[in-house]
Image 1 (tube, one colour):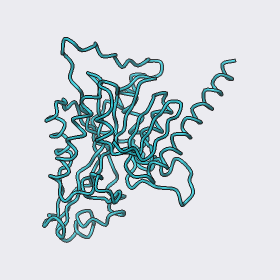
Image 2: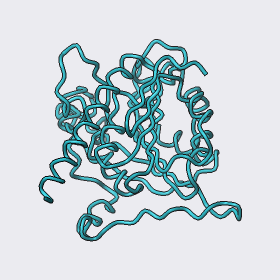
Image 3: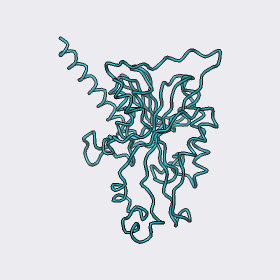
Image 4: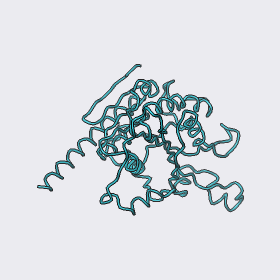
Length: 302
């Protein structure tokens, strides 16, 4: 395994490395929760590396490549624990795909997991404003002009999804999984009812690390960072304080930034050096913010 760079903090360890090779070297049953957003097949160019899963010829090749990671993730997760995958459908175009429509990327992700032993546990739909999507993409199917002239070409806006997979339990040799318990004083029933909804209507699409952390213009920005409140809900639901969260697609560190703020430990892998360097900055900042918050809480208690 070729490690380009690494950084180890008080509660995090991140590596500039190929995530498939790295995950294959991790010990068995060392991860309590993984949450990440994989490359969206060949929709974006994240880097020029031949190891980048975004640099594939077609969706089938992406699925075959991605499955190697899913297999290793199954091994490194503790029994009974969760892997949460952020994804969406992908728009197809006449020039590239021969037809204007949508490709079901979540189906590829689900199949890879089920083929490797994961249980398809649940799915959250994350509402997104179709007006914002229309203004950003100028998608023909969302234009009011199309609605007026030929509504058969219209489509609805595209939500995001959080696909939830659970590693099954039951082997006699397995240790009983540690339960994830919640204090009703901190998480009242109203909070649970909101998170238990199959559609998360209140996710702020602008609450991302690109915006949350003030940076200079020259600093690296991720193409499609995961919203921090999506990460917060998943980490709340599926892990305890002090447990280990893993992201094999670290990006600029969104999952780690939020996990550290919530009192978890974090491991991350990222192939692109520029993203990795920015992630290290963000994770160090999160640790510093956590230490400052602990100090203020101690003063208030006194």
